[in-house]
Image 1 (cartoon, helix red, strand yellow):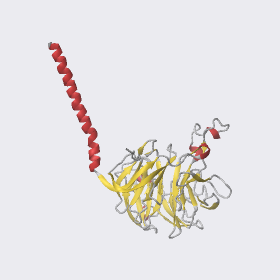
Image 2 (tube, rainbow, N blue to C red):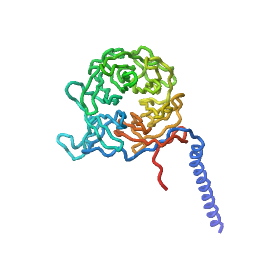
Image 3 (spheres, helix red, strand yellow):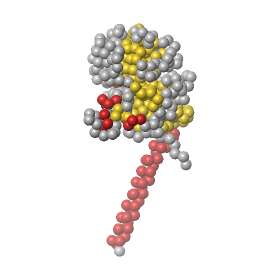
Image 4 (cartoon, helix red, strand yellow):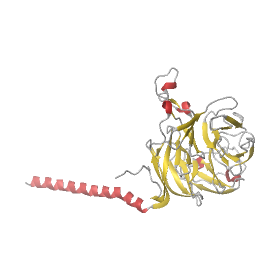
Amino acid sequence: MIKGVKQRNLLCGVAMAAGIIGVGAGVWMLQPAATAQEATVEAPIFEVDPLWPKPLPNEGLLGMTIGVSIDDQDNVWIVHRGAATLNNNEKGAELNPPVAICCRSAPPVIAFNQAGDVIHSWGGPGPGYEWPESMHGIHVDYKGNVWLGGNGAKDAQILKFTKDGKFLMQSGHQGKNAGSNDPENFGRVAQIYVDPKSNEAFVADGYRNRRVAVVDPDSGKIKRWWGAYGNKPNDDPEGPYNPTAAPLQQFRSPVHCIALANDGLLYVCDRQHDRVQVFHTDGTFIKEQFFAKNTLASGSTWEIAFSKDPEQRYMYITDGQNERVRIVRRDTMTELTSFGRGGRQPSEFFGVHSIATDSKGNIYTTETYEGKRVQKFTYKGIGKVRAGDQGVVWPKRSS
């Protein structure tokens, strides 16, 4: 009898302990949700569209997808690195000899309409121009011209084509770079933007050079350039990034993005320095802001796009090291929230790289490394969202 009572008491104690642990775990699990409900901000709301774009024709695959731009008809243009960045088990149909019916690299330049259909695809070496060793960045300008950069070891040129892939112009020459003060050649360009007001092309130049270059888009002539804080750029050794040290007076490599707002402010991503610097278009420095300042390796500030309200109240920053899209108040450079996380599902990222917004405010992102894709995030208006980090932004299920 005594033994039975002891066993019952032991079982009751275990059950009570388990209940206490369960309640504690429940409270622990509920606490972040309660905190998240309390910590909200007003910001743009997005949901991933997992069905965009449609599958590529001819069993085509994207390699490292390294640029995105929106034209005046809301078509989405991307550029990717193709077969060189596909594994052999991904491109069995184009091996010599072929080993399978699946798959092959899609053409490097692809345009999708709003429905997700491919409407243009072209690119590669051809007569009269030097195709980049490694693609980087695409921009469709206000005249409908398509600009391409490259960050291969010898890439010192930018290219201009029609939307149908007809070659128009090359500025700079492969293998000719003479450093960050070269008046004729670039240094592994990351991104290009042509200003419709001034008809000037602004170049994030780049992975070899450490400057912003301004180019006449009709002649290709380099007009002026500057480094961090508007300083004359130099190519002195940078040393490893130290988040606690005083900021360098020069850009680190790469100078990874260029984004011009409607009010004429020019935003430049100093990627491995975790900062964005803001300039007037003549190179006059205005301010800077750090984001996730303790991020090492590839850094936190990759590319920038703006919201589509007239004031462009918000800007969106891709962070391919932390796998986030950061939503920032543009006037104060204050981060409000972010979305995404590392992974391979919709609204997750593997090397989120480039970003653009269409006229409706939808966001498009591309992924480099093994990400190899483009994703669409549908704009759902302004509202209350979780401050800090939202995680994945899947569509809400209907009840």
